[in-house]
Figure 1 (tube, helix red, strand yellow):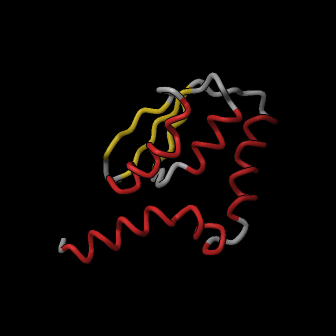
Figure 2: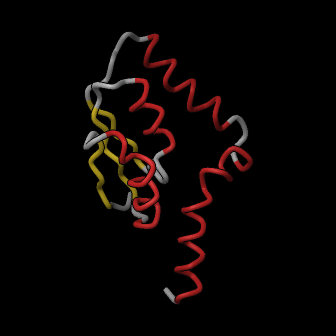
Length: 102
C-alpha cells in the first residue's frame, strides 16, 4: 500500500463516526434498537463480540448500557483499531481487541 492509500485509510477511520449516520439510513436508530432488544430479553450479556467493529460506535453503546459486560472488538483494520481504542479507553479494560479478517 503506498503512502497515499495509507493516508486515505487513516482519514477514513478518523471521520467514520461523523460520516456513518449520513451514509447508512437510520444508523443511530438501528444501534439503539440493538440495545433495546437485548434489554427486552432480560438477558444482560457478560460477553459481547462485535465482528467488523470498526471505530467502536456500537461497542460504546453496549458498554454504556451494560456496565458489567466485556466486549471483543474484532476487525482487520489497524487504523480503525486505533480510533476504537481512543473512543473506548474510558471503559477501563472491558474491551479486548482482536486484529482478524473475516
